[in-house]
Length: 513
Picture 1 (tube, rainbow, N blue to C red):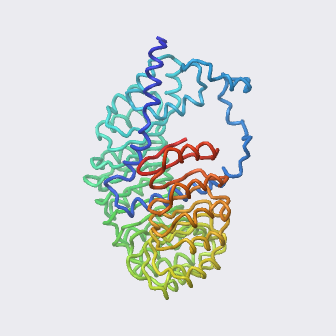
Picture 2 (cartoon, one colour):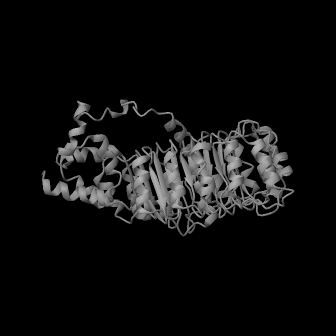
Picture 3 (cartoon, helix red, strand yellow):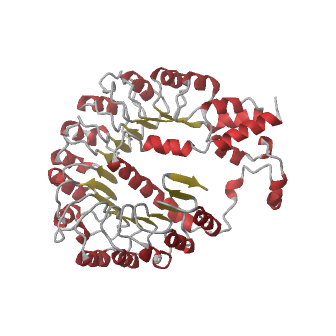
């Protein structure tokens, strides 16, 4: 059963599969989303990773080795320096490393690997989590894996999905991306899984309405994402939520454009424990519907691409009653004054993360002049916001001095203004300057000194050169660099002199380390 040649062939397939992440990126930000959608997901991903980045910065170079409990085959860590002399064989690699490698496998390689020996087969069975971005026989997956607790599928085949779910009732997390052919039949089956806690069914926009569900015992769902299911009506969503118990925490209804105030006003009864709500692009929802959410204990509210004057009364009531509201995301296509925004958010004393995209305004009425009563504010997104001048930048620098995340992409800001902002916020950890065409090396040369904790920077669309980017090697905690053009020599210097670097992305090319 064991064969050295077979193992080397399989390993070469594994390590050659370097396009897995690029494929995932392409599906997540592909043709189904416009530019604003991509920006939206970038913001959320950065927000989720901010706490992780902060924790990583506090780690010493001599990291705790308690997580290496799976290194049972390498008892003496002093022998690690001799690993380069070992042959490249599956049976010489520790389990913790094999698990990470197997995550990159495609379905066919996965099944072939299961034939190598009992050790690899057992690892495959215990991994219990797979992501498949290619069309493959889901019936074969169901037949070959004994235990599957989590699946991430893109454009799944409905019949194959039905077989997979029926044969694996132990599933707890199901994420289906861009599944236009999924209907109420498959959704009903998914909601019948006894252990299901997370469910994502995005862009099921051909057959899924939610009105054809059977009457079964409610499930203990905590996370539900129906983004892009634009055929779901008020009645359909109510039928779906009735199949969930009262402990649903996160509900994403982005681009469910048939939903109205009728069902939104019932959310406080249907899911009273909800803390995250996304109703972006639900253009039939008004301030009256939002006002009914004030009785919920919301933590995160996402209202992208909604008409701010229409929803303003609802946000005002929510901000007054939802004392634990920490994150608000909205974008405005109409001119909105900072006075209106401050009036709406004046009661959000717990606000930590605020994202405003494409707020149009004059210099006299600029979002850069925001005077929020939010001492805990740590993340601020002003992507594409206008009205920036010398007076407003001075006001901004005086009022915001504790930011850790700042997104000023596609803003007409110059080097001197950026230096002023960085000087006022030395604790910045993530800085997005994408599309800031007036930014040059002048301000980037000041980054290591002014923001020493910076871990991620996006310089795409700026006028920075390789010389300026090389300055980032002096930034002690830099982990992610995104730029347009990067010479091979510059890349290598960054890799050699930035021990914490994890990702360098340039000119549609991403590289993980």
